[in-house]
Length: 388
Image (cartoon, rainbow, N blue to C red; front, side, top):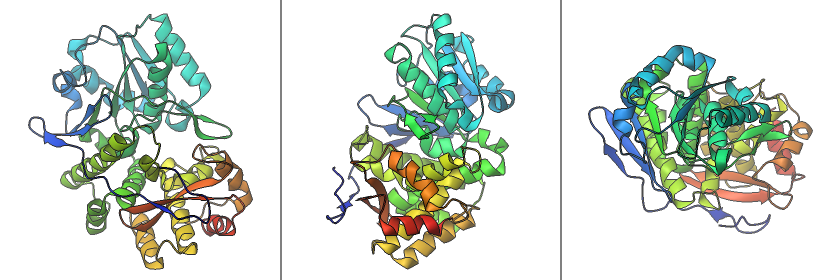
């Protein structure tokens, strides 16, 4: 699906008829299948990290690997590594443990290069496996290492944050940051499986819950009206039945889109909703001033304002979406950057085409459209001003 130039007809992104298969896999475990070229399961449940090898046996080729390495960060390692290692006890211990910096500091050339060298020093072969155990940044960095080491080794993603469970761990996108922008380096490298243990969310700090809700709301607005209604009806609850249902619905919606467009040639671009301006805000703040979830929320607010100015989004819909963001503790303004500080990052965004900014707007819940606008577009600039 090509993006039209400014002034052309918008490309409406119709929902595809086939949904990702969801099934039960024993007591308390639900499975969403990502039907990419080499399909894989997303296992969702409580306490499943401690039964990892049992649940993964025969799934995605994940029997005990000859050698495997673990990539995690200090906080997750201290809280939960013992649980995962117990669950993978039949595999034997990892040949190497890569202790990555926390959050976006994990996504640098230096960190990735050191990880690659350590895998090589351990002589982990192409039949080896890298297990990512952490949030979205750990998964992004470890996925990049797995996708580039020996031109690709097996990869298991075991997310420990809500953000990673509903979004980052599913779909095979990996990435490193540059000073010039977020995720400007990366490869598509699908995991063999995703293991989302909801019990691990009990230790999440409040900010990480909000980060996860931002991505959940993004998926709901673009792709899953039933999830949007669930979020509106329930609010930011941490009750297990609600959290499980939100994770399953978000994974199912994303898996459906990824299966139809694995390498983001068309439909999958709708999942960038909120990320065009959001990534600009994140990069302008040197990946420290705002968290990813806060940045995405600001980016969603920008896209809603831009949609209103272009006559695509009804003001009432924009208000409804902003109200939901604020209810979940997320910002809709207050970025603190004038348009001229954000525009260079928009121009360098990996979604830019022919010098124009690719944006995702919404006509209604579950009805996104794609547009391209020149960076000098007055509505684009005023929408940036609206979130400052």
